[in-house]
Image (tube, rainbow, N blue to C red):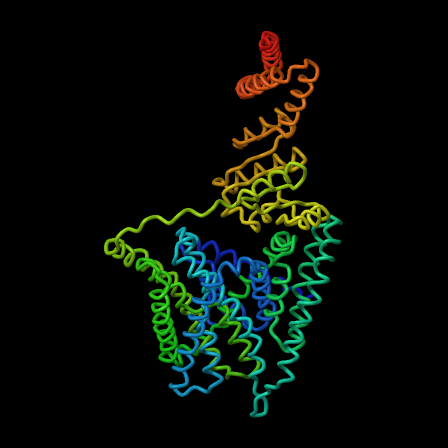
Amino acid sequence: MEHGNILLTHAMLYLAAAVFAAVAAHRFGLASVAGYLIAGVAIGPFGAGLVGHPEDVRAFAELGVVFLLFVIGLELEPRRLWSMRNQLVGLGLAQVAGCGLLIGTAALMLGADWRLAVVAGAALTLSSTALALQPLSERGSLGSRGGQATFAVLLFQDIAAIPMLALLPLMSVAGGRSTFSWTGLATAALAVSATLTVGHFLARPVFRHIARTRLREVFTAFALLLVLGIALVFEHFGLSMALGAFLAGVLLAESEYRHEIEAAVEPFKGLLLALFFISVGMSMDFGVLMKHPLLIAGIIMGMLALKGAILWLIANKAGIPADERPLFILLLAQGGEFAFVIVGVATANTVVAGDRGAALTLAVALSMLATPFLLLLHDRVLMPRMAVATAPRPAEAPQRASVILVGLGRMGQVVARLLAASGYPPTVLDDDPDHVEQSRQFGFRVFYGDATRLDLLHAAGADEADLLIITLDRAEDITRLAGIAKKHFPNLRIVSRAHDMRHMFELRDLGVEVIERETWLGALKLGEAALALASGEADRAGRLASTFAAHDREVQAKLYEVHLKDPAAQVAVSNELRDQIARTLREESPR
């Protein structure tokens, strides 16, 4: 019981530190990662000393990196990678290879062992995805040329970290000699191939079967089981758990269950990743800083200078505008979270000594802590001068609107076909697994999930989408989704299906402006055909149908006005309008 109390106490401490760090960081305009690192320092051995053994939580906290790699894998659709191939291969490879070679060479020239030089080159080359993407998003710069180049480099770094992590255990030293062997390399390749093959043929059918049960907790449990299972298999074969998680994500990147899986694991990823950064902050050995201040300062300054030089050459060669280059260099010159993982794996496998690993970790963490303040200096000092010195550029051509369509029933299929054929292929969400599977066979880009869940809308990209089309079957689901979208995505334009006029008024009350009653056009055309057959005058039937359609639009406007002012008068006004259209149509004479 005493042990349980300790676990509960530590859990409360970590949660309280995470909440306080996130709120405080947001209050002071800092990235949440910086807040987590500072919180870890505050409660760790070199702060208040509330946690005496940070290594006790490190193993559990590393699951945050595992889930981060899994989510990154989920986002790497082959089509997306192919569209970015030039920037990925050109900019990303140039940055990773150039910085890694330059940093590793500098370490060798300063007398470091070749293994330490390789680890330093690999770890210090990488940048923080979390610290880099948030400032770009806040500034609305992700669509700019510099923002796209930054994203491409970060994406390539995330991919490059995988082989780095896979090869580190093979550089291990035991008994004074390297443990590298071709057998180990072959085992690693076999594990990767087996994971891709088995996962491809088993994961999606199991997800499909579980989805039919409509039990969200079972779906979430299997998603977590898949990630952790593959990660543990990779660890058993001497590979990185993060590598296994990444491959698990890639396996499901084109799956119809991708968004539902991402929404299921996102809360765990965010919380565990916060715990990971807190544990890193707790384990930062400021004794190393006190003992080797010049070494730590030299690592930080050398990393920023060498990476900055390579990034300046890349920005110049890629034609990134002059006023965007400082932000491009600043966001990529600092260290990143994967450096902690790489150094940790290298230290655990005796590739580098513990004190050298601690020095590298501390230097990376301090560079990340400095980044928010450097960004503040960039915004308040450098950018105003760049704005004066740089001539204004013509605005870039707007990108094509992104569309999310919810519900692929009889109405949704027609809308999806029209949009796709017109060059606006939508991302479609539907909660019927059999329906999703059948629709994907006909070429629709459909994903499984309940779109009335806010987390799934975020996962599907509603934050950046321009248009939401709702074609669900149930009126209450349509109303609920419209309300959620208007509340959480105010800039998202909404086009919705309505069951009848009363339902249409409910949607208009929520602020939905473009609404179509589901049976209106079909019923109008059916009535026109029946009138043509009954009267034998097809032309007159067409004119009467057009007059009736125009009258219906007038009815909608008047009844909605009554709905807002005096709902009790709707029946009387409706009867009056009905008599009015009857007189108009009877007076219509044949031509």
